[in-house]
Image (tube, rainbow, N blue to C red; front, top):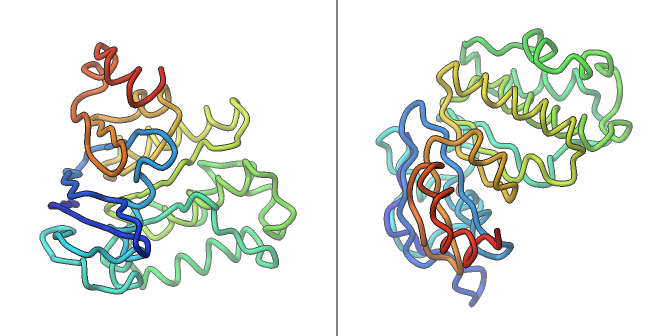
Amino acid sequence: MLELHEVHTYYGDSYILRGISFTVGAGECVALLGRNGAGKTTALRSALGLSPIRRGSILFQGHEISAEPTYRIVRRGIGYVPDNRGVFASVTVEEHLALAERAARARSGRYTIRSIFELFPSLERRRKSYGSRLSGGEQQMLAIGRALVSNPALLVLDEPSEGLAPAIIDVIEDVLRAVHQDGTSILLVEQDYYLATALATKLFVLSQGELKFTGTPDALMSNEQVKSTYLSI
């Protein structure tokens, strides 16, 4: 589904990603873990063309995408939930979803505005509310719904649990598990170790722009050195 090979990314003169390689297979849920500044968000931004890479290769469904603009990458079938949620203050919930659905250019699938409201009933109750009137949890649900309504082959999420109440995190966990079970591949950046290990089928741990661990949730749970050194657990 998604392949990064020896990717090197800089911000100005700052060397952020130092030759990382990882894959997200069809139907997998993959999580990137690490402390702040480890390079997790940069890995997502590199895959989406938001942070151009200096060296390396990025493929999506077998196509080289590292030189493509972000809008073309997304149109290939990637749904993105950014860490800042990207909700527009003066646009209603329903309008957010309708615009995303239209931008998908008739890519058909199981996710419609109606099904998003079934996943997140609180959004239906707020369908006419502007983005500025939503709580943080409602904004995150909207950001996820907006990505899903494009019926992506790969859903990419950056810190979806950040700043949310435990009850909202439980809702998001249930939705992401259902999305994964329906066959959508997921790439997740998450600092919540317990949420990541509950959802992911494969985990990568980054530190200072390098991969330090690759394995299953069970393998990470039993690796005390990696948890204490790179995750402070």
